[in-house]
Each structure stands twice: as C-alpha cells, then as structure tokens.
Length: 331
Ligand code: T6T
Image 1: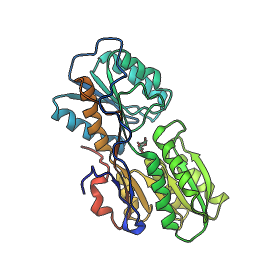
Image 2 (image 1 turned 90 degrees about the horizontal axis):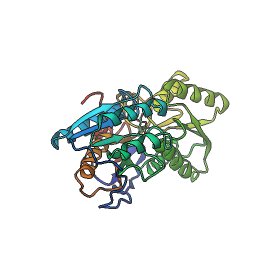
Image 3 (image 1 turned 90 degrees about the vertical axis):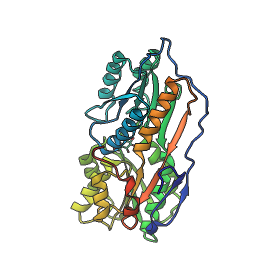
C-alpha cells in the first residue's frame, strides 16, 4: 500500500475509515522566518530529534538521511538523552555555531524552544519543524507532522469499536503538557469519546514520557476504577508502559488498549494480544519531506507551511499487510 495516500486506514476488526487531508492549510510560495544575517552558504543540514535512540526518530532520521543524500546534502543528527526542553535547548544553541544552512527540529516544548530556535533563524539558518511544533508559527518555515488531533479521534473511534456495547471507564495516558503532538491527540480523543454514552471518560494523566510512570498510572487507575474498559496511550512510551501494567494485572485484552506509534515492542505487543490497536505514523516520510522543505527554503524555492503525513490504524488481523508502517531500529 503506498504511503502517500491521503487516507487514514484502520483494520478490518474495527472497520471504519476516516479520510484525512494530507496537505493541511499550507500556503505555497510562502517563506518568512528568515534571518537578519546572511544565510550560511553550504549543503549542511542538521536534524535535532526529540530523544535519542527511539524508533520513531530513528525512522525519521532514515528518511531524512536518504533524501539528503539523494539531493547532495550532508545531514548530521543531534539528539537529547531525554525528551526534555532543558536538554534540547543547549543542543540547538550548539548547532548555531556549526552554521548549517538548514535545521530540521522536533521541538520538545511548544514554548520553551522558541528562543533558541529564533537564534537559528536570526543567523539566517532555515528552520523546519518535524513532528512537534512551536505555538509560534512565525519561527519555522514549514512544519511536517501527522494530523494528531484526527489521530486522537481515530483512536477514540477504534477504542469504542473494540469495547462494543460494553460499558465502563476510559483513561488517556499523556506524556508531558506542552508537547504539541500528544496534546493534540488527547484533545481529539476527548472530543470524540464523548460521543459514546456507554463510555465514561476519566480524563488524562501525564506520565513524563516514562514507561514506568505510565505503568504506575494504569495500575492506580485500575484500583480506583475496577470498571476500566479502555486506555488510550498517546505515544510509544506510554503505550509500552500501559501494556506492561495490564499484563501484570492480568487485564490484557479485558481492558482494551489503543496505542499511538508502532515501535518493534508495540508491534510485538499487538501480535501477542498485549495491545488491541495501534495508530501508526509515517516518521520516515516526515524526515523525507522535512529535508525537501528545508532544501526548498535554502534554495529560495516555494515552501509549503504545513504538511500532514499518513496515519494508519493497525490491528492484529491486518498488521502484516501494513508492515511498511512498523518503525525501524536502524536504517
Ligand atoms: O509519538 C512520537 C512523536 O510523534 C511524539 O511527538 C513524541 O513521541 C514519539 O516520539 C514516540 O515516542
């Protein structure tokens, strides 16, 4: 199945399809976010991911590296040890002194990264957001991301179908407040789940993007709400932690778990029944398109302000036919 269809696909077991626009509200030919200094004149790009050695970002880097190579650019990747603004900000400042022509960045906070990113644009470096984004839309020239709010809606529809006519409580496990993507997923889920009167929405709990905290949150929720029937985990770490917790509590399958992302561990969990559905993104395309937009900006060509990439729902029944969406551990 081609990766670039403008469609969110969900599995046969939860047979519903939601059509998403693949190019959201972009203005062709818009530039902006330029710098007050002359632009660096070289073929160097830097990718700053959200966190080190994580399959979502590894897959993104694979796409970005391949595209850069194809276009005759050099791509260097810098990664914080944790998904944390205080660790990512000094990396951005450090990249400033290496003067690449373009930076692709996944800002770990909608506000805290604005100042360091403005230093980049102030030095004439072209900035493209990949996956996460700042609240301030004037800094980056382009943002490439899944439509996360619609992904959250899709997760709610998927979970509601899995629960069927049963009744009970539903929990959202979020990462850190101020992460554009996961906040949008929780928002989309919340709006959609309210359409199912058989499901009582318990609200969202933050996990600091730590699987162990996610596991603790699920076990505490199970104790306080024995009628728990569903969990939506807004990303990879929260999903991995929730699956562990449900397995330890012997609630695997009884409490339906819908996760976001498709790491090798999440895919194993889907195969062995530890999770019932995954909303997979297309991080390699985010990397590919991020490089294309950065190069367009550097070379003075038209840039698209916002680009949305695919989201696909995977279930045990259809996962093998959608294996191209599984995230990579190496390129
Ligand atoms: O879900 C992805 C990414 O989209 C999100 O912004 C942060 O978490 C992940 O990297 C998965 O861990």
